[in-house]
Image 1 (cartoon, helix red, strand yellow):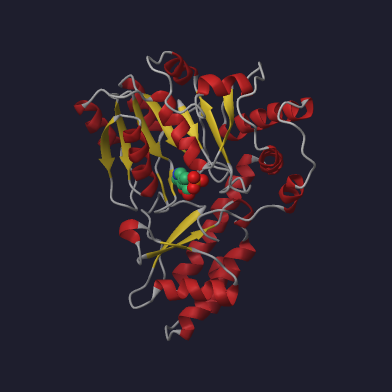
Image 2 (spheres, protein in one colour):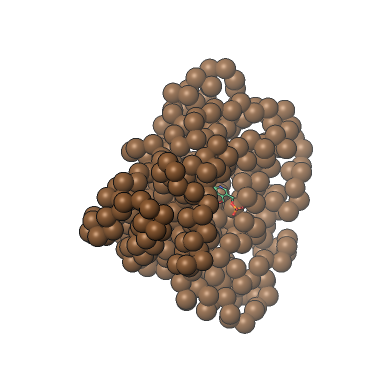
Length: 372
Ligand SMILES: Cc1ncc(COP(=O)(O)O)c(C=O)c1O
């Protein structure tokens, strides 16, 4: 129940134990086509260039930036947590001049802040993290995408934690470049980074004056492997693709709307249970993530000691706060397979017991009743 990796379905683990075939084997090529099709389904896009980059979510981030940015380009990045901060680092390494649009950790990036920044510069792209795993906040991005396009910029979105857990509409929101990870709400082990590029983004990459500085992540080369030509580029991680194929199949079998509803219901259940124990969520009201719940550590409680006991006595892993939120919050993941009512109740029982043992008054029965 940490910030990822989430639990993995048995059939995904079974898929990983299948015998290997080659990365150009017709059976694998067929599987690649199915993965691309299912990824289009979960990203809600028709983009032809939709596939998994070999590497974790950060490889997806680098893929988007290295292909779209050339040295000297201006970019605008929303920063309200660890992963916006990482985007700035990656963009700067690509030689970009970065304008940071900052919000306090735990709050969303407001469209007005982006609008103000766009009056000061002419960026090639605007990038935002949809679901900030470090703070538990979901920034609404449709309006930000509109503002970016009005300013003739591309819009780049991090959906590492949002994909598969809440609505991600790449075509309807007109996102030009999006990346994700497999280990959060898709409930697959870490190792692949689903990405999707719009026609505009692909044209931008094709029109570059200089070659992409990363040979490995160059979309112009990758597209000849993941596209129709099937030219060897690198040896695809076969087993990881088996796993992703099965995880996507399970996601679509459940149905996106059902899956989102499950994540929402378990979040609400956890939030109600915590409230009955006198605990509250730290993220901005109205924009709290369903899949990653940041809980304010009550005064006088040793947050690290609580996490340690959760793990040693109850076999439950949760995450700590990062950066300015270190020591102030717990991060409780309800992602993909981990998002169950049973896990919510098991967690509430364990946390309630630990707080009771430390001398706090906790009405555990009330908390479990409130969780439903
Ligand atoms: C929002 C977000 N972006 C990017 C990343 C980086 O992904 P990875 O750790 O898989 O490289 C993470 C990882 O937790 C994340 O939560």
